[in-house]
Length: 200
Image 1 (spheres, helix red, strand yellow):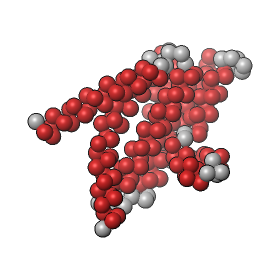
Image 2 (image 1 turned 180 degrees about the vertical axis):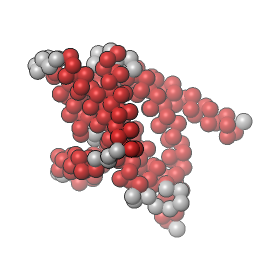
Image 3 (image 1 turned 90 degrees about the vertical axis):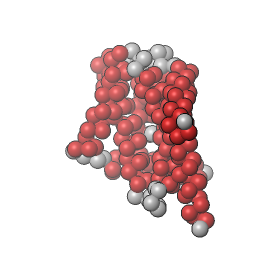
């Protein structure tokens, strides 16, 4: 009985959270598109490339789980954080963004190499989001899949916010405030639309 009540509560929270998930997605993609054209495009093409590869060719579980273990070991001093961080900290895309940050300064990598790094940053981010969702899908419980939806939704939000912060540190044209403003605007529209459909 207690488990049922908790699952219903989680499903309700996911229902309330869903418009914000839409808003974060719109805000993130919208702000990525403001990054200097070659970089923003390469990032989005990288995300698309991974999605296609995942659907039709290969799912790199071993690479993904290696990253998870590394993150878990990094935060092993605090087990609860270690358990959460492996799903909310996109290791590969974060490392690529850090490398990209230094590529135009200390490393002085070529423009073409920087674009390749940006492509694989998007690729790695899509891998993290999709394989995290698949990992949780193995543990879903009940008809409503409340725990799955709630956990994946929270993880997705944290991953995009963290990545937005890293992108804003790497590219002056990517504004975290701009990302947040777009997120709140799109969330407001989604909540308003949902309210009108349900109650008017």
